[in-house]
Image 1 (tube, helix red, strand yellow):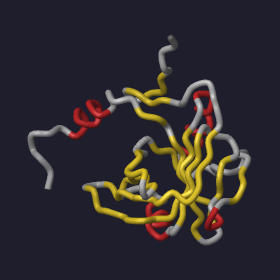
Image 2 (cartoon, helix red, strand yellow):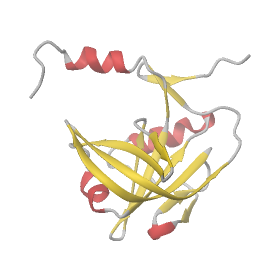
Image 3 (cartoon, one colour):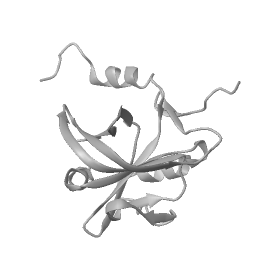
Image 4 (tube, helix red, strand yellow):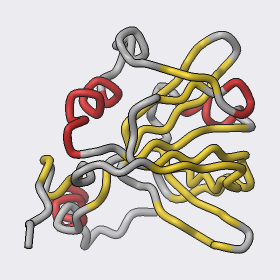
Length: 162
């Protein structure tokens, strides 16, 4: 049930005032490689190591992620806006010009990233118009990049330097 006092567009714009990192989540569905750009990534627990992200119930890739037993989350560097935009598009061949390797559960993984988390699905929860996916981190690695890719108020943003 929706709250008649909350305008969804104004609510979304207000949420956009909170800067987030930009990530790409990937999985494999049959023979199809699936990936999408998300900003709804968060840590849940250190022991056990758990992360979460959410996907819109209207997303084309929802069935794949609901059926997946494994997925990978890639935290992007500031210079990866083009990759972020590619994985944000519907219908594009997202993996055509991206260097990949194969991870746990045959999940496609980007070779360029700031941090990468290979996960097994731990839980899935209904969350209004989204599904919240909690993953147990089975492996992770990180690379240094100058700055992370940040999203704020509907566009990419830079972190202020000291």
